[in-house]
Image (tube, rainbow, N blue to C red; front, top):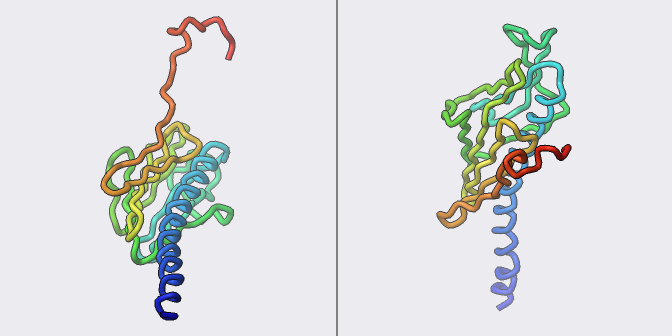
Length: 172
């Protein structure tokens, strides 16, 4: 009887820890994409996201070469940005403008003209199946979670043309 009481207290806590590690991995992926967007918007040099399949690490990189339009950038890890270590029981797939990146490793660079591709990181594991999306115009990513086969998405507000609604003379 005492053994079943202890099992009833310990097992839910152990499964909750596993679920929270999945959510933490997705949150770290979101933080990394937010840091990439922030660095891309304010930094004078190029930035990139780098994934190394051997170490299972995603890092924010910065260009050490002088000038924003360096032909061969010299990439170094950004020590101020968070890194994402992917545990062994998780899988990561990256998409850039809808194209799947290779599993072994990849580098996603910001462009010199100020534009940025749409970046999607799909994180899957035992208790988590999420997609973290950074739109080309966004400063922060949003997360789509698949729950029991359904996609629960955060709905972004639709753009509104103020001129077509009769507000062309209002300053905004």
